[in-house]
Length: 106
Length: 407
Ligand code: SF4
Ligand code: SF4
Image (tube, rainbow over all chains, first blue to last red; front, top):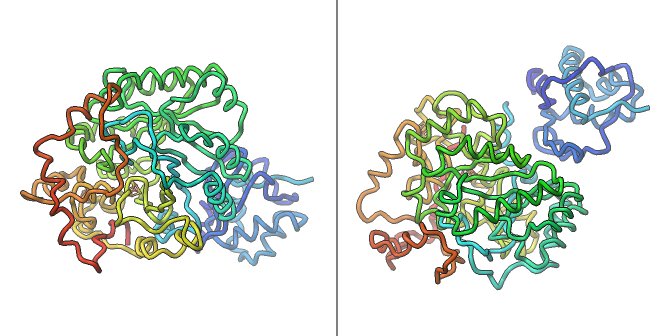
């Protein structure tokens, strides 16, 4: 998978990413179901009833791992994402935060 | 790889699953895609239907489109609706409005995860009732009024585009706005009884362009499913699912549990299995011969040299099949006119594949649409029911020619 596909991985488009803080703890929304697919995962949000996609397998790892890590950065590292790809993943995760797929946890 | 490229190879579970709960219908629309009318005695029982819902939940099919026939005539319809929602399978159901009275509308407004789609095929009673039958316009509008009054948020109005209603696109949008509904427009395919009236109803070439222009302007406000990707050859890609997803992301479960590649493809060539078979729906979806075949990389045939092939992909498999065109060639409504040429070249005595599955009521009543009354028994169609039809198909050749979708 290329960096480019990770960039658009949120599929939710560009939202307000200013509130997304990768230094903070996050989790996959309890309203969201992830369905494994060959390319990554299908995301269904039971609240908004929107379908979206996680277009790479590492991104699925990151999203699932969020709740086990103190911040987003360490979840990305734990999923084995290369350093060079980190900005693309952060951008994708910001999109996922804007769409409510992931959310800050206390 | 773009997402549609992944879609071509199929998903672990469908994302556009249509389930027709019954072939019974109070109306007899001239263009009914499933040739509905009479109930099939082999219809899935309540328990069997619940079993299918359990399976869909396990497969993480997050929502389904329920249709028919008129699904609400099944006495257990509301029970199945609740069961589905309770099992995390959201429902959008299509109805002609028959049972949506004030009481029901209020009940539905209080339920989460239900979408309702009301069908109208004309923005005026004249245009609508011509194909859907007398009184059907008023029935649909009454349902919309009841839903609006009950505070049901954003029902959908679903319109099949025909030669007679293309000029009414703005009026449809106005009706939707009036009732707080979302407009959905879809393509008329020559499926079911649609095959009998397609020549008279399908939009003319100039109207195809008219729809395209309208969609370019308003496409973000209307839903289209996978209806109009063949029109993207006019210029830009339109919003919506831009590929034929049959057997890859799309499928149909019919009232007797038969699983077809697409709701518009009720024909033995596109029958993948039955939910009553061992292994159930999941096995059919994952490993039926037909679906495996449909998920193989495909070539564009006669379309592959076309500069629009990337976006148009040769159009709709069902539209080709039920007009007797090869599946690896242009759509009958190809915007470059190759479909028309292919239709003209079919020659005298060509055989259009006809589905064995037909639940049309044989006697027409006062409620039958004018068009159907005119169309029945047209002498120039007599040959299509020739006993010779279907001969020439060999045992080993399914007759299936794969649709053209990317490569
Ligand atoms: S056959 Fe036509 S209607 Fe069916 S999935 Fe393909 S494009 Fe859509
Ligand atoms: S020739 Fe084929 S790909 Fe080109 S516009 Fe026509 S149907 Fe589409």
